[in-house]
Length: 69
Image (cartoon, helix red, strand yellow):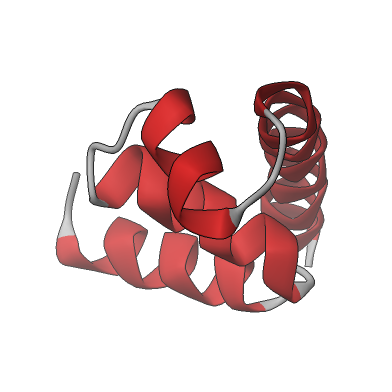
């Protein structure tokens, strides 16, 4: 990834609501497991999985909208 792509990714994540930001950053950038994220946030494992899924979906939408602009 180039620097510009990293910047775009960080900006796209910044457009998401807080729980999605926290889960995505923890999982992808801090290399935390879903179980570790659940333990730290106090969420159930299933809730973390749902937030991760929805966060990815929203991130994809944000990134595709930015490319269209």
